[in-house]
Amino acid sequence: MASAKMTICSLGMAAPLLFGQAPAPGAGSSAGPAPAVLVNLSVAAVDSSGQPVTDLNAADFKVTDQGNPQDVVLFHRNQAEAAPAKPGEYSNRSAAAPHSTVILFDLLNESKTDTLEVWHNLDRLLPQLESGDSLYFYLLNMEGGLSAIHPFGKPEDDHTWNQQVVKALDKAMKGAVHARPMGMNDEECAKKTYVALETLGNQLAAFPGGRDIVWITNGIPNVWNPKLPCNGDWVECALYVPHLAVTLDRAKAVVDPLSFTSNPDPGMARDIEYMATLTGGKAFFHQEITGVLKQLAKSAATGYSIAYEPSPENWDNKFHKVKVTCERAGVKLQVKQRYYAYPDTRPAAGKQQAALAAAYHSAVDATEVGLRATVTPTAGNPKSLHLEIRIQPLDLLLREQLGRFGDVLTFVSADLGAAGPIGDPSISNFTLDLTREQRDTAIKEGLPIAVDHPINDAIQKIRLIVQDQATNAVGSLTFPVNGTGH
Picture 1 (spheres, rainbow, N blue to C red):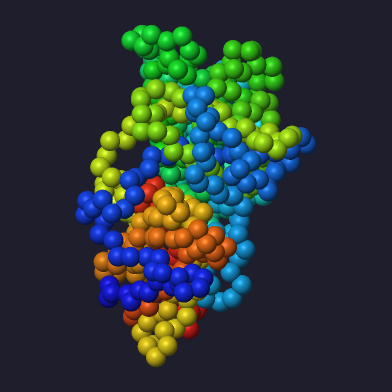
Picture 2: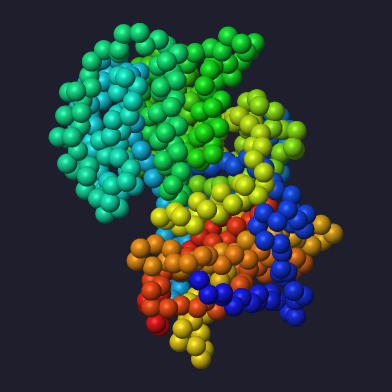
């Protein structure tokens, strides 16, 4: 594409230059901040009556990792922001917090009696849902494979599938309800189960916002690792569980086990609770699927995202226990209580480029970094659009040094036509250097960037991408060229 003309707006009174040109991605310069490796936590907070608490701040949370206090370096409320008020105004966070859920009905680890009960309950309850939007449905069959009832990749407007699900579910169930294959031992059963969960988590990773796997099961398969001397619980000592934890953490997918058993034995209930707290999910016992889905949607829309940066020595290939408490009395938190500290040894440039590529090719906008834009025709140039962009600085890891706050941002603008991208994207890097006053002003008003973006008749949409090089967090915003005065 043709080069966009970019200017950096100032903040406040006669401020010095806030941005400077930085080396291109992958150039290997030490000008930018050292990449941070964060532990990210999704937190749901409720009061004593079970209602969401939506007005907490970063200072309200206290976090320890292996008993060591941690500073919250990033904090974000998942609530929707104010919608753009005028034509030509766009935001990647103006709607309710996005949320996608997949139901996994586990035939492999259910008893025959419970399988029949769940089957009939799903036949009855799924058609009662108001909409099937952002909801997917798979069986874990007796061979340990995934059988799709309503798979990923269906048209986005297919929101009534749940009303016709009975016929498809009954057909699949009649072909799937049989004994486990001869020769499938406990280890193979556990491995296939975790592979199925990882597969669904990886597919959910393509969607923005909250991602839940409602795992309908009556048992958590696990096999102890004979090579690992361990005095902990099965999560600490089992085969394949570290791999499962790392995969789901990277996908930011949460597992919410659901048992239809009315009176589970203590061991089964404990294992289900452990699986939920491994990912920050919630364990449900003998609750209807309709109520479960409503609870998860409410938590996604009213929760918080927080992150902390442990020391480099933290990443030791072991499980770490996390404790998050709220300083406000009467508030109960739902958050994961452990993670596997797996060291990511990929080069920093490779991780940065992978995150940018994912945002560039995604069918939906990324929301880790909040973006707003006002789009108007460029004065005196009918083949250009003027973009006034605001970046939410609370989503950036602004490191403080000698009273100033610095970061490096990658800015990408791309043209999209009827068949996909047009030409090559424009990529620029800029350093941030803010005084405390400028940072505080930016928190209220957003970090400003102005861009004159050339257009032609083939361009239907423009996609903007902003990446924080300190964390690789990405925000993107896609808007149509039509409706902006052209």
